[in-house]
Image (tube, rainbow, N blue to C red; front, side):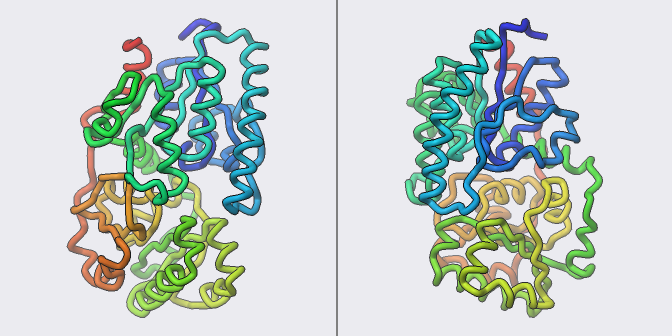
Amino acid sequence: MQTSTEKYIFFIGTVAEFIKLFPVINAFKEKRIDFEIFASGQNDIEKSEIFSYLNLKKPELTLSTGPKNKTVFSTFVWFLKTFLLSLIKIHRYVKHRQYKNVTVIVHGDTLSTLMGAYVSKLLGFRIVHVEAGLRSFNVLHPFPEEISRVLVSYVVDLHFCPNEWALANIKTRKGRKTNTYSNTLLESLKLAKKVKPKNDTLNLANKRPFFIFIIHRQENLYNSNRLQYFLNCAEQLTHTIHCVLILHDPTKVVLERRGLLAAIINNPNITAIPRQSYFDFMRMLELSEYIITDGGSNQEESFYLGKPCLILRNHTERMEGLGQNVVLWNNGRTSIINFAKNYKKYSREPVEYLKAPSEIICDELLNGK
């Protein structure tokens, strides 16, 4: 174990970040590497079952509470407020405990990723970025994620990229770059299979074949024509297969505001449920016939499971599964109905890895200084 003057800090803002980082955290525990978790408060990660699964203490520092009504304006205000609070609170925390050689680990492309990286830069900490190098090459899709990951790449000391394509995208950036050859999410999936789900996901669809439908990105929720089109297509599909609709909080708010939620809930061919715990959702995804989603992580999860997946986006920052089991909607160039009719041709075998990405990350952090 390291001396008390050395410290690794996982700066985590969202549930998705926590899901992808927990294999690395688990590897740290097994190797007895000293670490702490700081939470930005963008999501309430303290409710995650991962804490009990890994027998982790709750975050040592929670910096704020995320906005209840997640509009663009409220989220921007939250970011500015929490950024300033983070500078003050983290500085005091580290100074009081006399930590030296602090390394902050951030993940992905959220506003919390941007916050953690730039607060760490101002405080003089070493910065590690897991899942570095992803790009859609369009600043508005996804927004603000594409901007976040580009800005983060300028201040990182160690970039951990999930593949050669991502590595090439940041070849001009400073800092050491390492290819982990797959995403830590693949490890998360394997660990999730060992956990017995709390919910009987078979009963969610009344033991009938079902597909999963997720729509939660701002560019879809706040485009009324596109949102209605997606919902109409999903409803049409339910004439032949049951639909499990995952209601993220922003999705539920928008559907209620537009007067669309009641009809969805009352449709006997649709099971509308809140966002599930990670372990339960992975079980559900395994049991489903296919998934139609606008989530980037869902694209990776589908790829690793070999599950047919239609991404309701025009651009994606991930290469996983494209041209194989993953299809991009791309402004209607791919028909939702046709995808659903022919989904079986996109089914693939699950993906395996030669060496766990978390092991590569730990080896590089401990031996590559």
